[in-house]
Length: 273
Image (cartoon, rainbow, N blue to C red; front, side, top):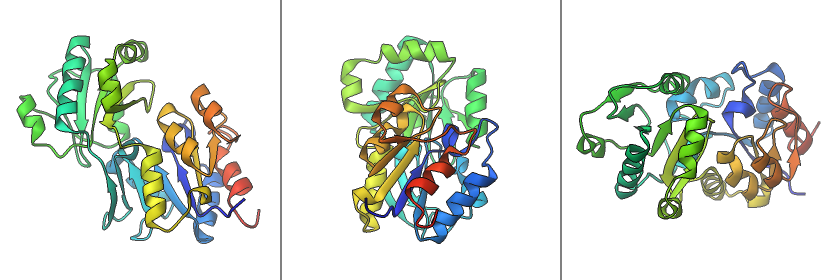
């Protein structure tokens, strides 16, 4: 097995425990990996605003450290000085997603790296929770024409889990073929550029850094992590991962409340463990 040179790590349900904390063991393992010259790449569905505190806490802010946001829509240096990968949802696909959301009575917002935007005058409680967690201020606009002026990366439906479960089953086949449609949490459904995924962004970044596919490791728990789990040299499922991730992974670690990320880093990446 080749030495791991890049570790792609999801945030929610993976890096963070259920109290949304980075445990001391996980922090120590990440920092040791970084000290050994391994690129530790936080890879998330969140926008940049939702990653800022995490990468600061881990000491990963630099022109030579990288972060993947918007479920693979962007890969850039953590100090925002270099953009490596950027795939936004095309306008025509957004209009199809918006029309579908309207037929379902679903709340929809789009996200840039600085704000979320919606045409909905009323928002459900899950919208407030989502935007609070990712620290993304919400702006209400008047029309779809106003949306077109926004440099957004993805569109997101947000609501109660059972409702979103039902909506997901009704997404038209042609839209599923043209867009990357994924769940980051039980309360959202995201529409992205077909070429945007955590796995695609991870491999694009690895190529930029001269790292081979089998020198990468990915750790995740939700279905939006499946592409990086499948495409990494070592795909690691958290102990709390959904069935799709457990089936796709090469190995499994402990859950997010029992230092699963630290266990995986120590076992598969560190040279002295």
